[in-house]
Length: 375
Image 1 (cartoon, helix red, strand yellow):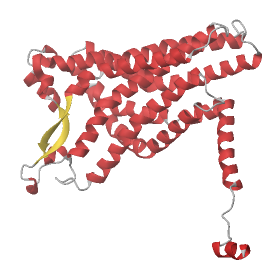
Image 2 (cartoon, rainbow, N blue to C red):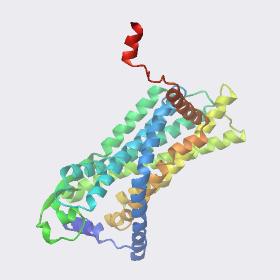
Image 3 (cartoon, rainbow, N blue to C red):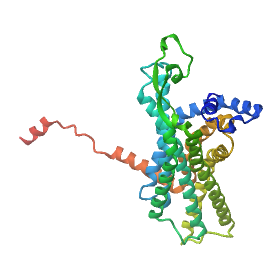
């Protein structure tokens, strides 16, 4: 509860620090942490490489000639938004694992602290952008089905939407960028262990909160809760929830025949419905981790600060674990639910194998024999 004490000392004007909470609920949530930490750590170490590779592979494949259209371009961007934060976070975890057994002045470098700072300052904006993009794509799919094939998304609309999403996600992270900075801490605190004789009160660079956060009764902290909490979590997850319900309803209506898509031909109609089904599965998996965080983010902003430290923070690793697992399933979902995607994967690998097997063998004729034949 050290963080709570810091707030109480530096921001005494906030009565929420005197909040009472249920000890039984706190203990129950606290008991989840060890398991959640273990699942998160293992999923980050072992699943992240798979998640990065499959999402980047999917992103490239969705832009090939046979699959490229405005919807798939947006889906490709989603895959990149999913892969990039995993690259940043997993690489940081690997570096920390290497340094964990030898936590010394030599291993606790400024480079490691900077890497950790990038993780802290980019994860929420990237996740907010990913959820916003998923909601945007879900909305476009819903409109396309609702219009009975009379409307389709354009590339200009996709570019405009992605640009706006990027601007909102980055802009909402400005207070976050100011709060998280690199400070110098005693070596034992940076290494998260008790002090030992050899430390000699040595200070090393480590990521932490800026003292600016405590100015004006923690105004910057509450501003971060409002902007990052709402725009990175609450708003995109609620939008995704609403658009997913609308899309699911439209799919059900199409299946029943009450509101079937009247496209130019039955094949196009069937493809559109299957694509909408696939997207709805991706959206539901995203909601499993993002919607609870969105609701907690809203609660953190509205309720006393004690709610976040006593309740919300105890579940962070649980939501991160669900994110790791859900995002690793994207390629599997595309393969299972999209015939066109399976065909593109098969064509890609067949082309690669054909090039390997049909490439011209290296000539075994030596230069000397060629010269001899010319004589």
